[in-house]
Length: 363
Image (tube, rainbow, N blue to C red; front, side):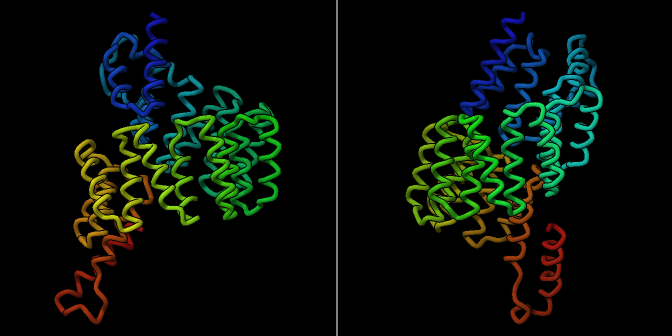
């Protein structure tokens, strides 16, 4: 029933943007009849992606989750359709890129270009892979190819400007953004990049204005609000920064990402009781997630329990092995346990060396 599939697809999408992920997943589970519909399946995969569960998103978009099991006729059809669907191919690559598996992502996109045609989303994704490798010249080449096909492709326009910014060519990036915004004044991606350009130039008031413009156009991308928080902190307006986080908390209650960010905000300003409250909420609602463990590790580190912090960060790493910050946090917790050479007794020396060696290996 196509109408039913469309209804479930839009329901999952709406719940996803409202960050009501458990309800979105339930909407998928509750309708087995439409689970093999390509649009519904991919939207369910994107629910994983928005929660930063990139491995799960990859397994669904690529169809690997269907491997090694006896499949129904509908599942076999779905599996084949995923191989030729342009959005599924793109998001397979995006998930791999987010996991830092850049060569695998490039292989997926190269194959897609060969077999499915020269699409703007494929070219933009290839540009993003080179951007992740800091090969900004090559990234710009691919973004230019996407813009040549569609001059209004905001993804390519945004990341072309970002590549110029990363090269230190701020004037060119500014000029590119002005031209792009003249063409697409409601492009939220473009206003976000304008915010980053201002932020990198330490024009924090200007950065906030641009982020606010992007947020007004699309209030559901909360990462932009965290950029605003950082800009306010740089302006010594921490109370306003906390208000931004509180408003997010009110709009999206019981959200793991917001709670983790709020925990780290409180830790940054030495507000340990407030940080502890966020850790307890995370541990109660999301006990076995990397976000919860990372917040716990940060709190334990602030409480000078470096051993407990290292254990929490190690668990976070084991769950999400592609997030660099978890490695940095784990190494930092290990090094906090290292005593100065003149403080170490003869029996403690091997342990000191072990901690340093483990931290080096992690980094």
